[in-house]
Amino acid sequence: MQSPNAVSALKSKRGEIAGRVDALQDQLRQALIDLDHVDCTILLFDPDAELDEIKTKPMPPRHHAFKGQVTRSILTMLRKSSAALDGLTITLRLMEERELNQSDKKLVKTIQKRVGAALRNLRDRELVASNEPVKGGLLQWSLAQGVDVGS
Image (tube, rainbow, N blue to C red; front, side, top):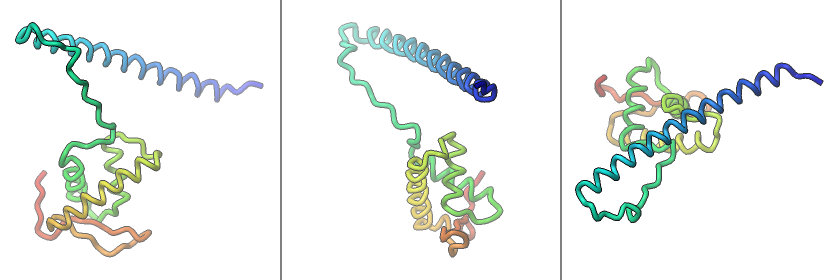
């Protein structure tokens, strides 16, 4: 039984994954070079430094945002939109902007909670306004009257 489409798709997927592996190996190589440079610089200033005693810092999750990043993105979206947007639309646009997996329901829920908290905070600061729910019971959000968030 032959499945040329399936085999073709699998070969394509394999090529994609192999490309990612190569890119990650390049990133790892560059990170090791950077680490070596920092180690050498530390030893220049403190030849007796014990580099093994320096604790590593864990990487934040990919969906982690820097302080104010979500708020800025939301304000930019609302400024550029000609109509009010619901929280889910804002969430999905934010995820697309940050290249996050929109089919991961748990991640969508996490980001939606962050967007909701940011929107409520912006409403409390009178930068955005929530309108009556229109579709699906979701609040519609827009910039508050007279608010200029810049470009």
